[in-house]
Image 1 (cartoon, helix red, strand yellow):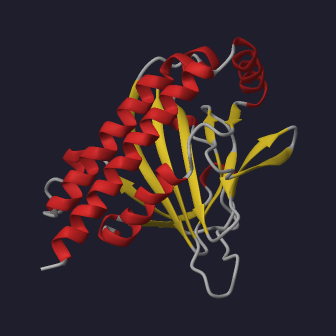
Image 2 (cartoon, one colour):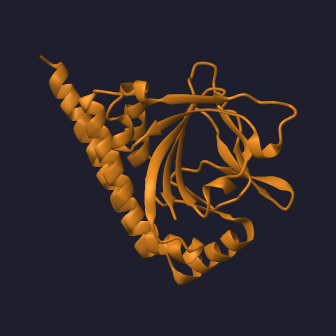
Length: 237
């Protein structure tokens, strides 16, 4: 008799944090100054990548991510591409999970009503965030249209080797990373070195097309913890 109220409370908490996340982005987009945007434009033109700090309250994404990891592990579609010593750097390996948020992809494969509802809330959140941030990204990168979203998840030892996504065309990804019980980052090739951009609380990463980048293996911070990195990917063209 007590399970249903607990479930309802979790659902309400999930929605509250996603609503607050949407409000975070609306405020952040409105607060950006011309000087700040000019700096981001210059950096993106030079590097093909920009990190913007303090855009959202970390808890507003961390709480939903934790609930997804606890309640919907069946939706974590793990993908492994083996490393091969003789292969070109354009096709290196990876180990990570992808969580698809397009309803048509999952409709025939899963009958979990709770997941359908969660997926709908995440899609609406992504669309609202994208609407708030489109004028900003248009100024910085030139993109004008939100085209989709998904979540990447990294468990202990998961990684993404250095690669670029030139085959995907002129897409730009806005990345919202949250890491639990680990120190994680994305590395971007610039000036013949891999530049480290840590997963700072509330940061977003704007990743341009054809930019060489990687995500190092996720390592635990303490012996008694289980690390997890989740990355909300919002894609523009």
